Length: 202
Image (cartoon, rainbow, N blue to C red; front, side, top):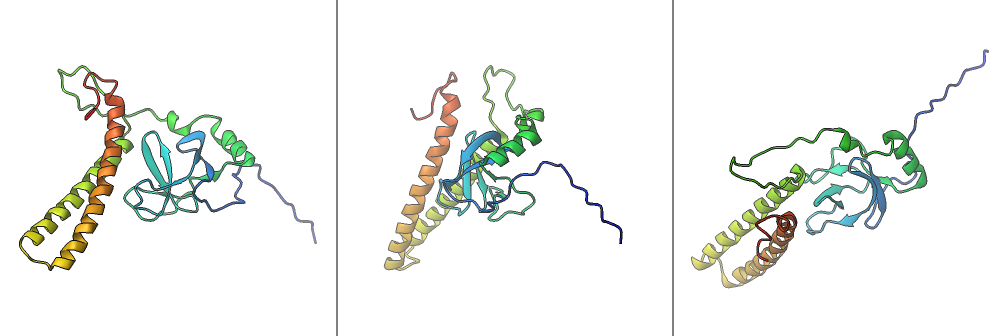
């Protein structure tokens, strides 16, 4: 019987000894930056996903390192986005991406909605703007629900004990969403502080 010939591929691969992630882990996410990140819990307390705070936006991932869209509850599991911050992984990423952020290779698309007579503009990422819009939408829905609850209480449509319980829940929701909007206001105020208009509510 002839001897079999074995060939080997010299492609660079990322180390995969650790396949799960948890809060506090230091990870690499080359789709965002070549710098390491520390995973945290959802700052809003609404999701069980792991979170990376980058460039004023929150990015969500599951325990296996897959990206989860802002409006989704689970990933489609196309490709792992996170890697543990090990020497082997750093070397592999540096080899694959040549010590450069891959996102910087794509020309920046800008959407200009300024008026002709305006002389100052703020450039921010569309993802950050989308996060702000989603939070405003969520807060609007909550406040609409609170308005409906107050109408039912005013009309005597629900009994006293139920009204008290729902009022407590409404108060907690209003507090949470007030904090959410306050955080987004702080995000918007950061560039505004450098503009001729200054911070809102300062």
